[in-house]
Image (cartoon, rainbow, N blue to C red; front, side, top):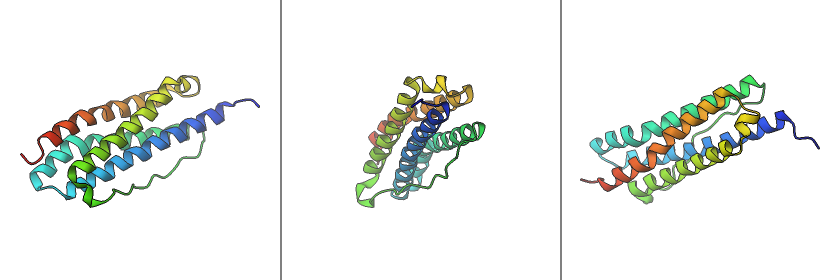
Length: 152
């Protein structure tokens, strides 16, 4: 059976959607962490962690939708993820967000390393994925610093 370009593009969209779902988990966890901290710490969390993850989420969704539209493939509606249990505490939510965003980044890295984005993708897709990965790559270091200074 021949492997068609349309099938490869759909597989790419599915892989990107999995990464988007991971980013949604990170967003939900950070949103829940925000609810557990004071106003000052919440502002820090929002600026240092939530904002880059939110930007990555938006960019990934836009990249997914635009790629699907360019090749007349079905797009997908993404729903917010469940944040988890409040008993995790702020550190647990931040750690969960880091794991989720790292998993999403790994998924996108694997996709980029497969050369699929060159063979059946396009420049806009590659640019979008690179931007998502750049935003995601900032989160672990920022999270370490945030947790280290939590409560100070």
